[in-house]
Image: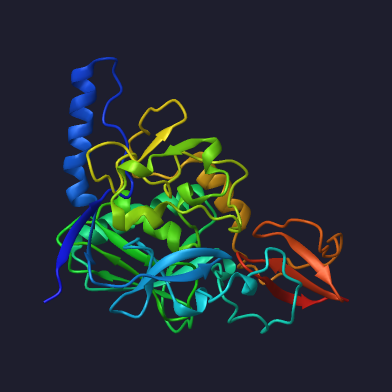
Length: 345
């Protein structure tokens, strides 16, 4: 029989109190670790072999889950096989725009939701989790252009269901994945966790995986559980949502996430633990989301004019939501490719 070890992790936690007294600091850490039992709970099979794949051009350790998706050593962000690659060569940071159906199967592909609208179906959630889910919807819709629509006959949608775990936890696939996408929530999931999982559905990776993270935080690898080290990899190729690193982002891990010894795995540059996560998105989450997801268009008018749009340049760095013209067509930048909009003129 395979040996199993229960790994307890905090997805969105920080410090309980910040007072200049040792006793308060001790209580804060104690409360953090107690909360860890409920925040994210996953089982890692010690005999499972992790394999190396490439995601957004970076080598990552992944393992195949029972549902056919891949996780980063138990991460709550799940990837499908066609979002991974066997070599870094299949990822281009600034790919050449192609026709509308080209490039859909490129390794590392992450796609955003059309018309800034997440289409969803709910399956098997308790009334309490549904209430927390609605709070999470409200947080995103009240502050960003993102909207939520219950599925009727749409082909692109995410299924939100219970994972069956008696915990405040969740996992989610990354970006739009046709009918395969999902968010799975523990039976005690709260808005703190659900808001974060919606971020993954929107296509966002964890904040501490940004290429510029070392300018803002310290990763204490000596305090990280052995099987979770790959959770803290640094992506050199991921398209950034915002122009600067955001400690307060809903996508940021807490200071004690995957700690093996009760000491912080993440601190700021001065060695201080990060603020406790709240059931809200940060100002930079809002700014970045609204740059990627513009207001939805329900008017039926033409908002896709080619006039004044610059031509694509191989030497320029683009961000999600940027538009270019190329060989007589209009394109919009997605996370890992260009989406064809229309022919110009």
